[in-house]
Image 1: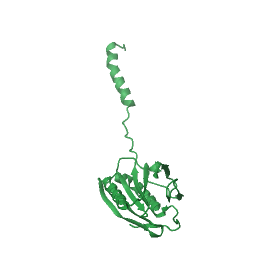
Image 2: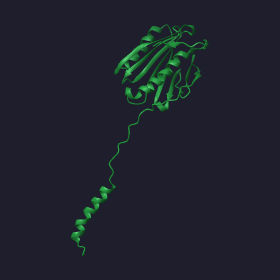
Image 3: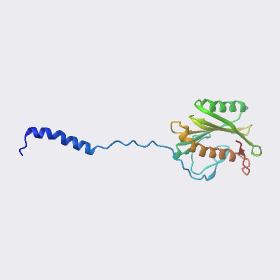
Image 4: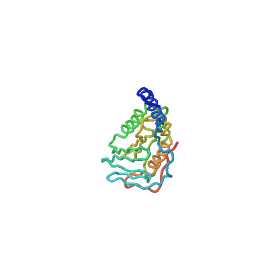
Length: 203
């Protein structure tokens, strides 16, 4: 059969269409990144931040960053989370410090569905008193707390995730880190105070 230009012109689009459809693959959407849901059993170790008048126990997987002036970052890289600690001396201004800490909690949880304020903490023997706030909903911070000896020391802490707040997805990590925060509060001791007996955070 004689191949003419008309036959080539007719066949070329058909061949190209066949090659295009043969190599075409339907796009597969990439799965959205999610936080890891399985975490190691916590192992706690004593920590004494330099130049700070307190010590506590932290999870061994956490990394401490010192920002100076007793401002600490307790980082959890795999969970994309950080617990921020800020220390302030009490100078006849305890009421103001407590008010500011509570105001900061409510300012940061404007999108919260519920704020749990029942986590009151007391260890009279070691003079460590405080309160724990647990937040439900798409808030910027899921846990906030403060501890004080009521005369000289005041320490605040906040848990933040480096991701867009989505309460359902970060809930397992928030619960895990909430236990670490409770351990921090229960084991915290002011400088020169006894570390032998822990306190407990009530629910």
